[in-house]
Length: 449
Figure 1: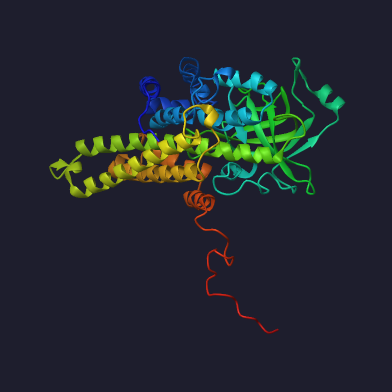
Figure 2 (figure 1 turned 135 degrees about the horizontal axis):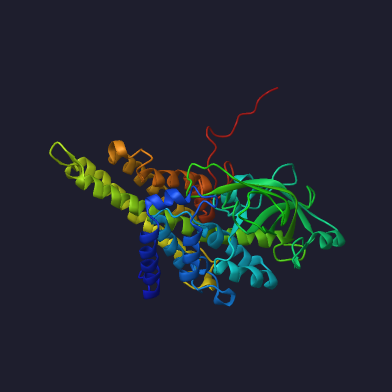
């Protein structure tokens, strides 16, 4: 691995940092999260149109920049510094890789250039809040996380072709695709504004249970409630602890959908694509957490150098210095892990064709370390800022809430590490199996009945 960044990568960071410092201060963030979309749409259009942010990891053939997960992670680190509320993670790290991996040529051509240009945003909807499981970050994604043939989750069913054709006339665009979705999903990132929904749904009933991905085109993203372009779709923005990460609940009542990739669908290919998307999303989220932790630590250091107690700055006290030094070491370790995870997610290269060859568990481990570092830095920032640190007027709470909610989104940390250990084969076999962990107390004795 070459740890040095290229001049183009430095330029991405430099340009993005300059723009965000001018347009995205704490006051601007607090104002943006109170708008109906939950983010500054004008700033997002500038980031997409001027810098090509959502298309960084997309091939140039589909209107992207032609970079890879490393450049996307570097961009996320800069957006994390200002806790930027935006659909970047949902669009570029979750939905776009799945469209690129599974979509038909028609679907790619129709959607990816618009996503890269910022004309559309997209997200991945997974029922039951099991996004981390679907991406194989906290456990295998071959289970019943999408419904399993029982009640709950999101169910997909075929409809007769004539019914689909009659119900799909929407400006000449085929929206139905012969499928209908029924169910609901909560905690969907930017689900109330995304124009393209990639929905994980269960089909086949209990006997032929399988999970596939479907496309739902939302015609009017700005209008809350039932949307005339998508019959049966109700989207409600949820109240979240971290307002800079807007989430929504989707209710689908026989919503017309199109199978991602067409044909009859391949459940094994869907599971592989989701598992390959997991390291990319984990690296992006880890880099974002590192950026947030870096800014929180820098502001804390600046505060303790100015705050005077007992006639001297509190930063001159050895106890405070030791606490800050420990945070700095944890932050640098998390940054190295995030960079390596992004490099590995690209198959050891920056080009997007290397994606999907990530080493087992690297993304999960990097995300776990970054989330722990952000949580520690944010907690100490609140403490060392004293009485002002926990107030709404101060920005320290933005980083603390980001740390708490990110772990709920793709965590928890101990499950990320357990999954990484399982993928690396550190603990082969299960309890009581040859080579597995020993059963406490030994084998059970025979009980006479």
